[in-house]
Image 1 (tube, rainbow, N blue to C red):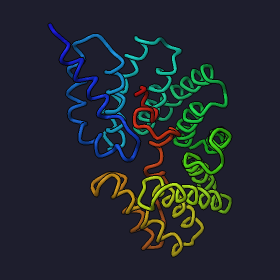
Image 2: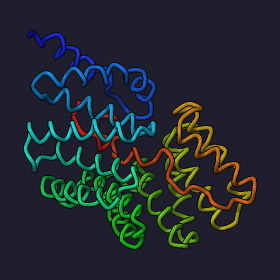
Image 3: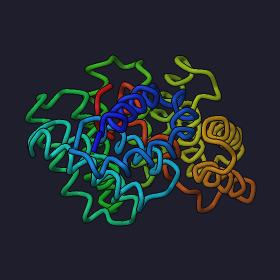
Length: 304
């Protein structure tokens, strides 16, 4: 059977689905049905890097949309291809393993996810050294999973190391720093240290605002974190406008029907009713652990 047309389609879809998040998000969601069809047909040809990249991008999109079981299935396929093409100790495998761990933890299976994340971190450290930004991405994922296991002191130590690597590599005012500051601020708040978290959340927002407009998803994620910290300090009136801005940014990025938008809408309603029980997830922020912001490199693996 002639597989050349399918192989060409995979290459074209790889080119069309690349780009920076969140600018690439509308294009990626529009292409998702085509990605899913292509990778389904790709089962019948030899595994290729194009197939692995498209599986990773489709899984990334489905994960953000909240379709976790399907995202896990696709990322497991991407991981298997990476292992076949590159071996067990290659950074391409580590990248996919790290993102798979994040998906598995999102399925309320952090105990299963943590060994995957630790293995991905070990491979990445061995490949790039302990102070590389790719190591920080793996640490960010591991901190999220350890936090999901409610081991907050350990999560804090991991998140602080990730932040230090990013600041040393990019500088203290780089937009990527905001992602890592947000993680530390949320863990501190969950440790009942919101007073300590507040200046970190404020600094994170200032960095994001200096780089982006107020409707950018990163600014919205920082708004959300600051609102959570302020609400934990019972400063509800101060928290409200940041919660409103976070909701507006999420709607601008993802649309009104996205699960993150529903979470932020619930948080805003809770603030209006006294602020108890806010969801402390970093809405819109976990998927952006990759410092470059590339959809393809956002822990989903695969170069352009």
